[in-house]
Image 1 (cartoon, rainbow, N blue to C red):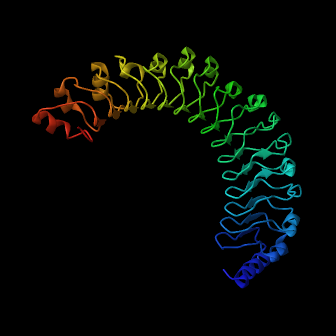
Image 2: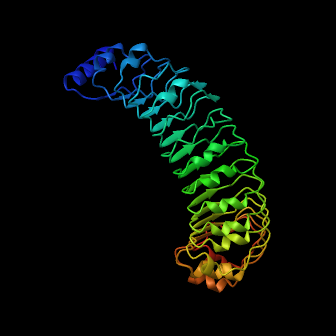
Image 3: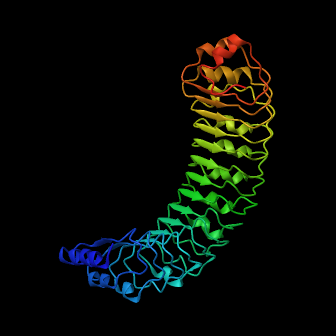
Length: 375
């Protein structure tokens, strides 16, 4: 877009008293100076997907800004942002930032801070005055620590720290009483951060792709947890207290070191999706799955060392209205329960490929009706 057209847009916004300006995807290398004409009225400024490298001084005089979107640019450094007392949403993701200035701690109205996909290695600001924060996203950076002053973030609901270098969390994390979603995937954690068990409203926890060898009993305090992803760790078992996570609907434990399905899982009555693929499981429990796990929709136990499919599991899969997907591919199965029961299967998906099964031709035809691949 030419400078003339941009100027025309700004003039129209000035004339119509419009409080927002959308200048995205325009290949801008700098912020047009004429924007300052709107300093008395502009509240929302969108500048994402350009080639902007720095923020001009005149932008800092736009005190009424509530939303500033600078994502997907080439900004390496932020100036003092203390002037933006009304700023509620700051989007600075996908830039070239290596740190965030102390002045961000003065943005008392801020409720959303989105800074993922930079090279941020340190946060120089304090969280103590950011009492209105609801969402924070620092994913895909170079952080290894957070300031230990999170106790005033009473409204914080979501925080994403994935793909960083965290090995622990500050003790003040335990004050995040409203927190509902926490993303800690792809970090360097060898111990489960016990401080998060005080976040009793947490309903989604992603702690996959770390180095966890165990989960503490205190996880039982997260009684509102609905989704837990602890895949790609070093886990071999779950604590007995896991049975208290009665709201859990999704549990992903794939790519760990489990040799059996943990006994506590059978008491998770609301569980719908259970992922245990890529472990070292050799035997499956002969539970009455429909009795304990009435809501189960999908069970993925592929890529293990299972040689036999228990009768009860097979019968429950056939008879359950909810249980629709069973993946036992890439195991060591040499036989299946009574194949005549397969005719009762309706609207099911049964993955059996890459096992040691052999069928005669009539049975092969029956199986092909509902099994994705049989080899």
